[in-house]
Amino acid sequence: MEFTTADNSRIAYNTYGNPTNPPLVIIHGNSGSQKNFKKHVADYQDRYWVITYDDRGHGASTNTQTKITYVELTADLEELRQHLAIPIWNILGYSDGANVALRFTYQYPMRTRTLVLSAPNLNFLGIILPIRILALFAVWLLTIFRWLPPVRRQLRRLKIMFETPMLSWQDLETIQQPALIIVGQYDFISSSHTATIANHLPNSQLITLPHRSHLVIFTAPHYFTKLTKQFLNKENHIHD
Image (cartoon, rainbow, N blue to C red; front, side, top):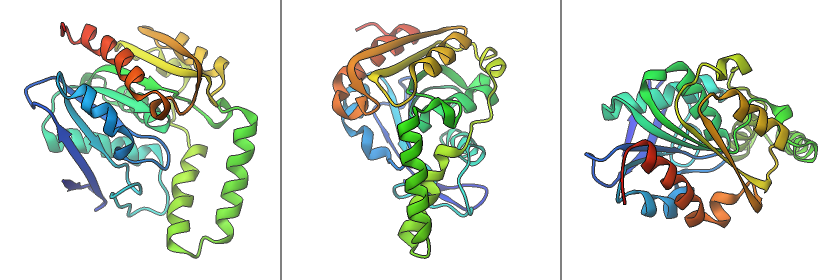
């Protein structure tokens, strides 16, 4: 399935489960796609109406702009909500997707019930130095071959890492929704940056998974859904 945005980008999406259940929209990370959450959907769809989609310029979605910013990504999420006529939903975001979730909730507070944030970051400096260096090198390398359409597409995706969701610490303090933040012990988002985000979200809890990295959704998908589902069920008054 797909819908067309105001700027004529096409956003590919899928829904799973019973539409009468509480809606849960899942936002993938940089250079990923909705396919990253295939295993997770199977765990969520018994109790939730699950919506997955490809960010613009990712997967099967197109992008009519010369770059991708959180302005467009947030607008796309709101247009998806309107397209599906969902009054309020739960949001699960991974990495850059967690940043979109935060920006969306700040901008549309009445449309978010709960937040599950896997490794969010508010700025490029929240990423540990070795990964920042690798990202800069990757952008430099891709820029050399940017005349190739697939390379140009990947370059636009990667450059999202250098964008900011345009949220201050004070902005985070206005977000009242229950929020679960999950990071790996060896995540490439610095632990101090993650702790600061958690401290500025008034109704949040932070879980650090031992011996796990930024890729926890891939390396421990069912453990991830078990933890997040406990949180979601509690906040949505669902009893197993």
